[in-house]
Image (cartoon, rainbow, N blue to C red; front, side, top):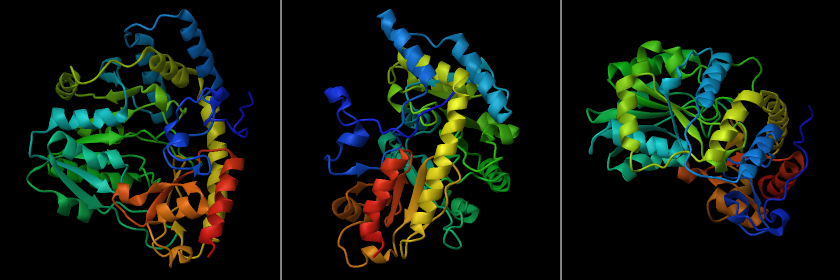
Length: 392
């Protein structure tokens, strides 16, 4: 089957119905948005067809997570990750970000530490504050040379741990750097977790979008079975199949006690997953792997186009993303920004007409995150606009 990833989709004025899109309505029509992690592609046709059938049913009452969805995720996990999970390990909920906050409430006490590694997806940095816990941070190791990967700095991570530290919020693969962590790195992390008696929430939202040939995702809990009782794994079809607005995610929790604690924290604070999100999730995992594989080829091409363009921007560097459709650009020494006032994100929006995510929100000023999950035409237009500033 052929899939169309080339035709731009009208998202500012879909059929002139003006359905608001965070990505396309935050800024005015003169700005090309390459910021929030939301792709500009139609979702898989099988998902669209299933949703249309469900809408035709015409009743949208309270739903239940079907056993068939749980079985489907078990099959996906076994096939894609070589991890045999059980249906009863799954707690479906409306979103990964709520799950991060619920984990903090369920697994820590007020005043205990919630540790994150920066740069990191911005909601990670808000969890401790919003749940009345102690916010703790450790930096990743910067690339040794332009284009080299970011590194897990275990010494910095261990130095950030105090007697109050209880919970580590981990991102695997990593957002925003695109790192796919090597087993050797994770082995050191696992030893640290056990040594300090930490619990872990492993956000693996981007794990089905690995861009390098032959690389296979291994969930943290699968790679280190002895730690599985300490780990909550978060998955969702949202990034892989472009279903973020349907808010369906799953917490996979092998340990019964940990699962009970997490489930108890959701009561009264979290609604059930909406019925359309459940339908979309099941169909995506059951039928849409060919669409995912075709998407990966498109993203690999876009990544290469971006690598070639960054090489033409003096003083700009980028660690080539190994996963997902997000690129983390270092603009601290960009010659094109040397005499311009404002943050790199502000300058590029105001003077190039391209909206990127501000690195300050990820804990690292001077960087931007660029979403290349868009059509080739839109990406090329954005890169041409960025040329006007970054080529100097």
